[in-house]
Amino acid sequence: MVTGKLLKVKRPFLWALGVVWALGFLAGCDDNAALPVTTGENGIPIAPEFQAFYQAHGGQAVLGEPLTEMFVAAPGERPLQYFQNMRLEYDAAADAVVVTPLGAWELGGLNEQIPAPTPDDGASLTFPGSAYGVRDAFLRFYVDHDGQTLLGLPISAQLNVEGKRVQYFENGRLDWQPGAPPSQRIQLGDLGQTHFDNEMVFAYQEMRLARPVSSAGVDRVKISAYVKSPVLYAGDDQMLYVTVLTPGGNPVANVVVSTTINTADQTQTITSAPTDDLGQVALPLNFAIPPGEEVIVKLTALDGNGRSLGETVLSYKTWW
Image (cartoon, one colour):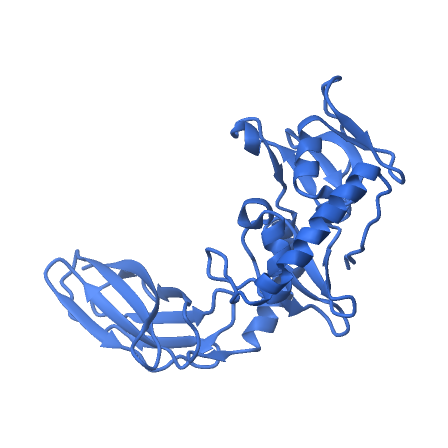
C-alpha cells in the first residue's frame, strides 16, 4: 500500500512560494466551489474534492487525464482518484488533498540507479532533510509548479532510466524530453498510469462492475462490441455482443443499442433489448448478405429518451 503524506521544507523562498500559492488557493475556493463537476477530455469526471488542486497545478497539461472516478480502495482508507501522472487522495478530517508518494514507490523498484551526466553550471537548490538537490531545467519546473506541494523532496540524483534522463521526488518523477519545445522539456512521468496498471486496475474494474448504473443521468458511454464470426461462412449464424460502460468503467443498464448494418448495396437497422446489470446485450444479425461482402456495423447506444450516448463501428466479412 502507498500512503500519502504532507511535507515541510524549511527553505525561505520555498516557504514564501507556498504562502503565495496557499493564498491564491484560498482566494479561489469560493469560486471553485460554485463550479460544476468538470470532466477530462475522455469523459471521466474529476471529483469536486480534487478540482481546485488539479486546476491550480496545471490540470491536464501537468497531471494528465483522469484514469478513474474517485473511489475508496479498501474500507477505512482515504478516497482517491488516479490521473495519468499522479494519484490524489482526499483527507476529509483535514479537508486537504494529499499526493500519494508514487515517486518513492517506483524508485524502490529500480534494480540500480545509474547517474546521468548533468551540467555543472546553472541554478541549483538543496533541501534540509534530503541528500539530493534540484538543478537546471528540473529546478525551473519545480519552482513553476509548486514542487514543494506537488512533488515533495527529491529522493534521487538525475538518473538514466531506460535511456531517459529523469529525477525522482517523493510524489513523482520528472522526465527530460529533449525533443519537446523548450517550455515543455521537463514533464511529469506517467506514474499514475503505471501504479494503476500494476496495483489497482483489476480491483477497480471488479468494484465498478459490481455497481451498475442506470442510463438515466448518464451523458456519455463507451461501447465495446464484437461479432461471433469475423469471417461468416455460408449457412452460419452471426451474433453481436455489446458491452456499455460509463467512461469511469461502470456498467450501464437499460440502454438500447441501435445497430445499422451496411453492405455495398443495402442498409438495415435493428434495435436491441435493454442492456442488463453488467451493461451487456447480445443480438442476432440474421441478414441475407451475398458472399464476398464486407459488412460495416455501426452501433449507437440510446437512453430511454432516444438520446445518443455513444457510438462505435466494427466490421466482418461474408464468405462462400
